[in-house]
Amino acid sequence: MTTVKEEVVSLHESEDQVMQIVQAALEGIDMDALTSMTPGLPQLARQNAINSLLGSKKLVIQQAAGGVLRLKVNTSQQIAGTEEEQVIYSLIEESKTRGIWIKELRDGSGLNQLQLRKTLKALETKKLIKTIKAVGTTKKCYILFDLEPDMSLTGGTFYSDQQLDSELINTLISVCGSYAASRRNLAIENNPSNIQMQRECSYIRPQEIAQFITEKRLLNVPLTLEDLERILEVAVLDGSIERRADGKIRACAPRSSISPLVSVPCAVCPVVEDCRPGYVISPQSCDYMKNWLADL
Image (tube, rainbow, N blue to C red):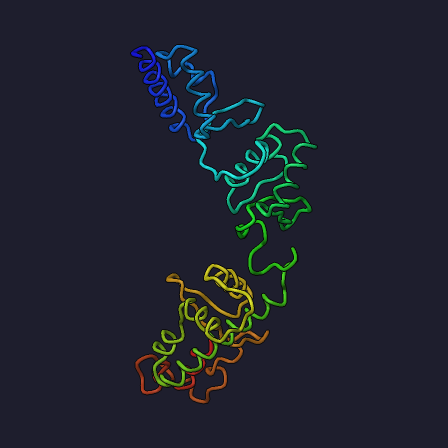
């Protein structure tokens, strides 16, 4: 009776030792490395511990690049199916929203092409996984059925059926520009004689535009602040808005192809010869100059 008890304790101690080492290896550990890190365990005790942990689903065996087999802690959900289905499901689960390509599944599972396709078909039939066509490629990517794919796969809000939705982008640029222009005009109306306040009050936070779009339900798709920032970057390059260091934006004044210097009031001012800084007639007190600067 005493001998049996010692064997049970010995197995538990061996399992604990093996488990601690595998847990510390995030990418898994091969048998040679495990052997070198457990010099105090006899080979039979180590093998029994590994078999027991595999049988209880606490550990799994995965094939790394080059065909090397590694022990890893089993963190995946257990499903009703074959051993091959569990292996493939676990690999797809680990990829999360990024998805995983069929070549990676083949390398990670060690299954041949026929076995892999049969297993994937079974998992798709059970609605445990689904395929995603990534933007810019015709290859299929696999993710868990209930997950939404990462934006790097779908292209995000601005892609529809793998195609860039130019109409949506142009609509959003127009909405952002119109909203910013209305705020600029309001700032000028509320501060007719204070150019500095006109400029300051015309700047708005991107969050205000995002809130406006959401409240007015201008889109049929959800728009994140990150999506809006990408649109604003395009609008800045387009010259319809400008952005300062703190991230706030404002509408640019409508510009023609003619240089604004052509319309400087000094060019047609009848008293330009008498205009001097600090004089009665000066640039600081000139209403025409103030209006011209406000329109820049």
